[in-house]
Amino acid sequence: MKSINNLLNFQKVASFCSQKIPILYCIIISFPIRVLRVFYPVNKNVWVFGSGNGQTFSDNSKYFFLYLLKNKTNEKPIWITHNKQVIQEIKDLGGTAYHNLSFLGIHYILLANYLIWSTRRSDVLFFNNNRTIINLWHGTFSKKIVYDYSGKSVKDTFIISKLWSKMVVGFNHKDVDIISTTSDFFMPIMKSAFNNNQTFIAGQPRNDLFFQNNNSNIKKELGLQNHYIITYMPTHRKYGRGDQNPVIFTKNKEAEKYFNDKNIKVLIKLHPNMSSKMVVNNSSILNVTDLAIDTQELLNISDLLITDYSSCVVDYLLLDRPIIFYLYDDYEKVEENDLYFKLEDHAPGGITNNESQLLIEIDKAFSNEDYFLGKRQEMSKLFNKYNDGLSSERMYSLIKNLNNLNNQDNN
Image 1: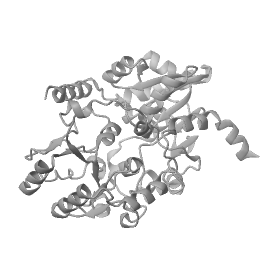
Image 2 (image 1 turned 135 degrees about the horizontal axis):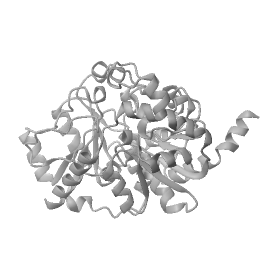
Image 3 (image 1 turned 45 degrees about the vertical axis):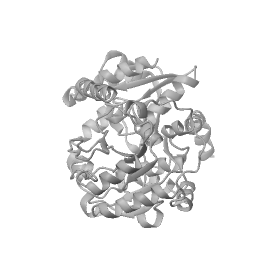
Image 4 (image 1 turned 90 degrees about the vertical axis):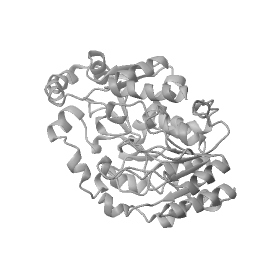
């Protein structure tokens, strides 16, 4: 229990230290910054990174940053953030991080030859669109994204004017030099979503973790060393403005008895856009949304995944473990967004619509080690070209060889 409290306290400190971006201030200082760009030299060894809209140390950006930090001594990776706790976390890891609005932060942004981002274009502000921009993104599955998104939620939620986009963010999706994806299946999807043909298959750096000797203490910290772990990880609704995902089995005594008898613990981790305030009345269910647990580390210790339309499916397939889909609502109607394909055509696991079906499917997966094995392996090959833990290395080589690729395209 003490370890869980420590994780919660860490997250509270991180939230407290996060700062809102002063929009007007950023727009004002963007003008002299644009003038400075003209005179600033480019250092080909400086890379700037960001994620989580400048608030978190997470996702593909995080793992590619750590890869450079540990393996490429000639490169200088710099993490840019608005969160003081993130700066300290990276310093503790032996890395370098600066606040986006600090003198040194702006200095390295102007100096850098490479920008690596994975959540939004505003992960790092003030970058020069005439330099190399890499979009590692944060996952793609069935729901339509970016330019393909047909709903109103993004337009209503993101209050970012053309001036902010041009002067502060500093680039558009058409300026991105490399967009990363995981397989030929997703190539046309990503090209359409970002209206950019500079899409390459390298895999996701965050999934390299699955292939490493990971001495994670998460199970011990949560007191789950001897438990079978089911993780429920649904995607957001209306970018956080929709209804909260249901807390599965919270008042289901049959499920509670089943989980206790089988020594199963169900962990709930909601999407960062969604509220984490929920009431859990089941001793076998633990809400870990507010804990400082990296998503990939959580997936890595999970024996079974329950999700809906989340891109974590593509990641989890690399672990070759059971997946169950809990489709509790009419997603396309609720989200006001279409899907790239029918989930039924590509689901590497059972599809359920209510708790009764879900519990039956959990028992099937728990009792049968070959649960949807053939379909899982088929979909893993379709969604992931590579299954080797070398995504960061491939991405690094791709970036360093970018000029050669562009020259070949021009010939």
